[in-house]
Length: 407
Ligand code: GLC
Image (cartoon, rainbow, N blue to C red; front, side):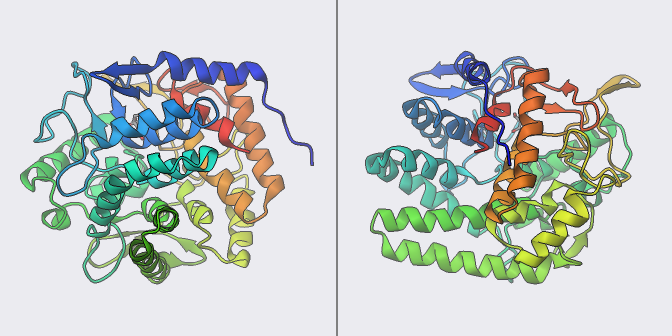
């Protein structure tokens, strides 16, 4: 198998974007995902930045995580947006000052551990540890009491705001306009506010057990146990490991059907069988057996009618009615397809890691080659068209740089 090498120019392009998008506010260093479109600090974006920065400067990776935890809430939640310097973009009222009140994919333990693996800096691990313990303990309480699955109270918490995985809970048709989607999200946001973003209160409005979120939890609880061990916190390590086992077993009994893990809705656990890239997400946490993984790869990854598009990996299967990867002018509004088909470097990166974990080296290398090709051809964009490869969405987008971490 020939492995494509990364051109030095590409490393430089990624690095330049990270440096140009870097901001400093009152001694807090952070990186904005895209200056024009996303001028604040976002949670999972910052984790991605830290991971990419492990290929450049560890000190900057540490600063990124440090600023991220400074706005942690009393209850342990780390908000998904920090408005260090607020302007008119996304000027929403979240009921608190200076931050949002939602979570985003909980991958901070993974990001921290990646830094630690590079330099073995136990002092930094110690420094971050209390925040992370409070954060993951908070997430553990976001369950349905009778099981261990983490629930989300708004699609934005998944990081994939308009993914069709959330159409059913939002009661929206597979084909709709951006305005319709925004209206739905806006009225949900009003419920979130009335509930003061309390998860117990939100059960009636939006209460989704998302496959990707719960997979990230599994991977990150495992890492929390490892970090606890490194720091000789034996009891904590046992706690995180035990919680993780319970979570894995509930994922299997509640989400798994027809060989796939599906999102599940409400207190009744209705399965949402929409085929998105999240079918592959559990690979990263080793949740499929070897045989199940083989089937998933054959049936979905390598099927041209499902996810094997020319520029894979589409975030939604080509066979889904909701698959709409085009950016277009619709009525008054500019249509942003976002998570309804386009290829994102983050999902490619997760799937790449999952494939490697199971030894699907050829398939992983193919995905990596396509990813490198997309960036060489179109630059660092928010997402790409799965059939034409055209770059779309935000410009100078930082986490396209995750391609450097596919290795
Ligand atoms: C979009 C993405 C979300 C990301 C944010 C900032 O809303 O859907 O995942 O965190 O932009 O980049």
